[in-house]
Each structure stands twice: as structure tokens, then as C-alpha cells.
Image 1 (cartoon, one colour):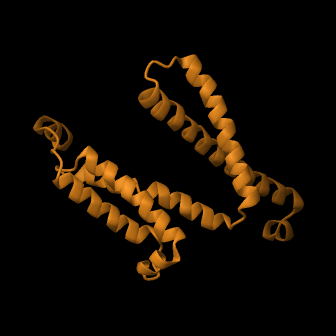
Image 2 (image 1 turned 45 degrees about the vertical axis):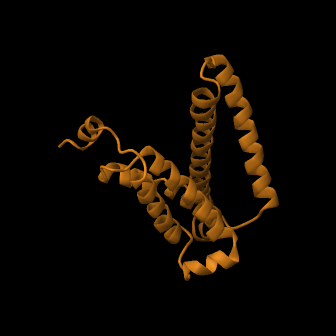
Image 3 (image 1 turned 90 degrees about the vertical axis):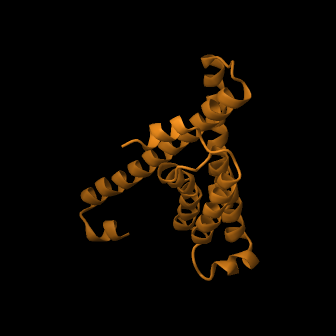
Length: 176
């Protein structure tokens, strides 16, 4: 509305087209990333290690359509502010910061600790976001704040009780 009322219609059209193009580019990038994660990282590396590129391509088309349909349904049936949706989505991605930072700066971080941090982080984020009783324990902070603390604790505790990486791995990653 500000653009339409404050600018020449031609300039307003160009600015609005730019905003829409930016949104489409972002959505396109996220869709491609999620499809790749499902088909390559989950299907080809964990479920069917002998999958051919052709079968992965077919699956990626199906996954892309399914994710697109889910997103459209979410947009139609779960109206919410774009700010709330983005905040929740980026909070979910921010959970991965804990294992990344510990992996970069703490020599005793383990893969099991990282997995535990992510699993505990996702569960905590959902509980702090969706359960009003648990949300009260955040003391007015966004759900990501207590979730990061809980995820960090899980990372440290599980890493302490699991086998540390071999010394050669530690030296390779921490050598200056």
C-alpha cells in the first residue's frame, strides 16, 4: 500500500515485482534444498544406498510435488502471519547451530552428542511453542532461547558419556 500510494505506478510496479521475485526465489531455493535432503541425504544414503540417479530423480519429482502441496495446504488452512511462520521455521533451523558450534570449538564433541542436541532441540522447540504450560517456563523469552540451552546441555551430557573422536580427527580439525 505504501508503494502504491507513495510512488509513481510504474515504479511501484517494479518494486512490487522485485518483492514477489525475491519471495519466489527464496521459496524455490528452500524447496530444492528440502527435496535434495529427502532424496539424497535420507533416501539414497540411508534407505536405499544402491538407488540409481534415475530413481532418485523420479523420487525428487514426487517429493517436490508433495512438499509443494503440503505448503499450499498449510497456507490455505493455517493462516498466520508470515512473521510467525518465518520465526518458527528459522528457529527450527537455528537448532542446528548448537552442534555446529560445539563441533567447531569443543574437542570432545561427538556425533552422538550432536544428534542428541538436534533431537532434544526439536522436541523442546515444539513443546515451548505449542504447549502453553511449558511455554510459561520460557519466562517471556522466545522458545528458541530455552531450547538452545536445553540442546546445549544435551550435547555436553551425551558427548561426555560417549566415545570421543580419535586423536587424529581432533588434530586434523583443530590444527592451526
